[in-house]
Length: 133
Image (cartoon, rainbow, N blue to C red; front, side, top):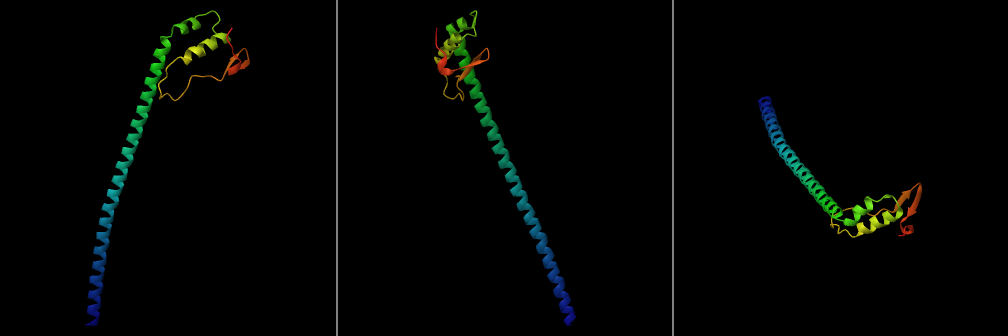
């Protein structure tokens, strides 16, 4: 009779363990699936937000460049500087720089239009050494 009770206990115990293991695996799998889906969705939304931010920045930069192009196209002195006989003279660089200073650049432009040196026939002229005639 003792042997019969031990075998019953082992059977019940094994069925309990198997039932618990199956339930734990099922609940754990569902939880991991939910976590994975949430992470995928969050990463996708962050990527989309980053792409939208980049598109907005590029669009703003293009608008700024368009504004600068319109302003430079409407400068009457710029056409005279470009169409002269010797457009590469230091005096023309100075006049061009002074005309470009008159531009009203948008605040969101991430660059400025000043050149620290300009080369002419192999020689470098620093910014402060160029004077008008």
